[in-house]
Amino acid sequence: MNNNNFLEFNDVTFTYPPVEGDLDENEKQIESKPVFEHFSAQLPEGFVSFVGQNGCGKSTLMLLASGRLNPDSGTVTLLGKNPAVLDDENKNLLASVIYQNMEFETEDKVKELLSFVYQNGSLKGNAKAIRNENKNLLDETIEVFELSNVLEHPLTKLSKGEIQRVLLAFGILYGSQSLFMDEPLFALENYQKENALSYLKEFVHKTGKSIYISMHELDLTKKYADTVLLFYPNRDMALGTPEEVLTRDEVEKAYGVPYAMLKDHENLSREYLNSLSNQKKEAQ
Ligand SMILES: Nc1ncnc2c1ncn2[C@@H]1O[C@H](COP(=O)(O)OP(=O)(O)OP(=O)(O)O)[C@@H](O)[C@H]1O
Ligand SMILES: [Mg+2]
Image (cartoon, rainbow, N blue to C red):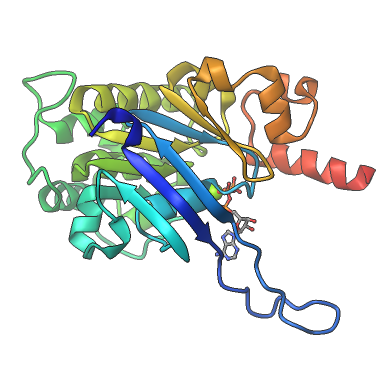
């Protein structure tokens, strides 16, 4: 397998089912438009960042890539396999997913959940830390993601940022061959985002696993990603190194606003992006 076709989409078309109750002026059901239509691409291994404005298709692409959604037609191949036809365990071992909005009901403590994930994935509770041979991977993730103060707390009692840090640790400790992380950082402090990204990148390079991550922080994508997939609003995409892809022109095209409006906001928060699109709507 060469490293440029770790993940392949071949003539993929995908449409979400119509949203119930979504009616036009004649009270007729509004059909959804395809999110992807005859889409083909080959994505490399490594630390790959998905960037683009709200609704451009980042989450949907991750769900198709990891077999959590099935294309209507065409094929998805991840490491030579079609993830959608695997049973749950083999699907998880091939691709873990950190969803954009995850909610939990368990009263189990963080400590127990971390051990459970570590024991029940491919690592069987036994892997060396990547930064220090003498340490265990579990202790390293607790340290890197600053979890020691929440180990005794149930997941349901954690803040959003704490939950995100636990989920990052789950991703590492399960040991899948690839990880899809959908905006896993947005609730973190800036220094925590940097710590997490530098660890994830090191993890990818030392273990040979691949991480596909979506985030709105252009500055951090530039700093950490090996490869960027930039989504344009018309579903076109550009793939390359951050230097190749995140040029002024391309970023303007992808976000549909002048660069000057973006350049002081390299941390493109969800709120900021929404305020830009509201401004655009009001101007029309
Ligand atoms: N469950 C769903 N049912 C119907 N349409 C959906 C559903 N989820 C997403 N869509 C639509 O599919 C398109 C792609 O959405 P997607 O969630 O993949 O975008 P995104 O790039 O992840 O956006 P964001 O930055 O807001 O997370 C959008 O037009 C969205 O409205
Ligand atoms: Mg999304």
